[in-house]
Image (tube, rainbow, N blue to C red):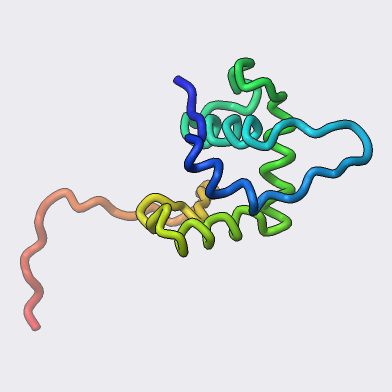
Length: 120
């Protein structure tokens, strides 16, 4: 299963990506990198499991994801898509987090049976 941007999706976001630096080593194609990022985010696999068919190394995808997050690129893309009606809030996850409970954290009691209504 490959996750790839459609031509319409690519056209909608490519102008919001940072310009290519003409100095130094040529950078990997942005569209391939985004496809690799989407693959990991959609499947939940580990970064090294990005299919070779995307033509990008997993560390390139991870670094670009982090750099673009720090530079606000993803936020600009999301805002542009929402303004153009290319996406709606039901399709966009702005921020999620998972927090591991530490030892000694409060354990919520599970009700074993229904309690009678309290007398007020």
